[in-house]
Image 1 (cartoon, rainbow, N blue to C red):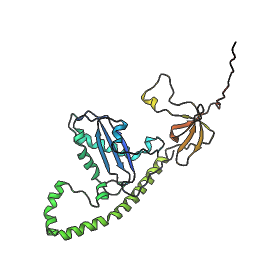
Image 2: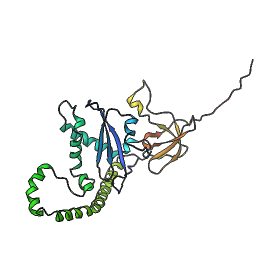
Image 3: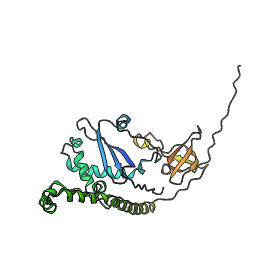
Image 4: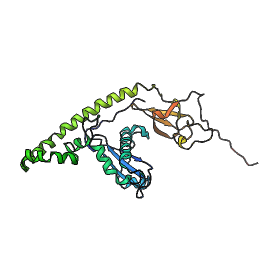
Length: 274
């Protein structure tokens, strides 16, 4: 299916969440709940002992079906997870059992660098100014005192100017993200084969659970379903030919059924007492 980009304007309006793990036990925690803001790429996370629904509900996460149960479409979280894992590999000790106490360091290292899709760092987009490391502050301390001469009025006015520039930062970040995702979509769509689905067509459903729990001589493609409706952005509504129930699934989970059409005819036989 063609790549469908998600572009947002306002900070903190849309978040993507995911669970990372399991990791080696660290003070009773083995999972990380990661939340990524789609505009600023800002990441918040919490170490968890379990990956069940009760652990997620504590943070008042409201479940909205937006990607028809297609986790690959939540690409921003997957990219953030990969970068966070790479950072944590460099900050944990050799036993890797202190990772839950190193989350703040890992996220500070994630928030401060330049991000190509934004054209700036997540910290700058959120706070309106770049983040300074302790070494940088110590090096520039004398310069800052000399320039401002401890004049709090000038310092406050300078901060107001920085805050007023945040609208420009957001507009520039939106423009950069749009151009970046446009190029990503062009690269992605060149590598896919177009597939067309029509109503009343019979298709096979890919059962991803069989990749984790393989059955002997069992195919990962379920019996034919009938297409009820095709949506413009990749989602397909299908009907179970046994029960008549309909549900939505991403189009990548389907493939054409080339066998003979299957009809579900019901026959009833009246049994009489002998």
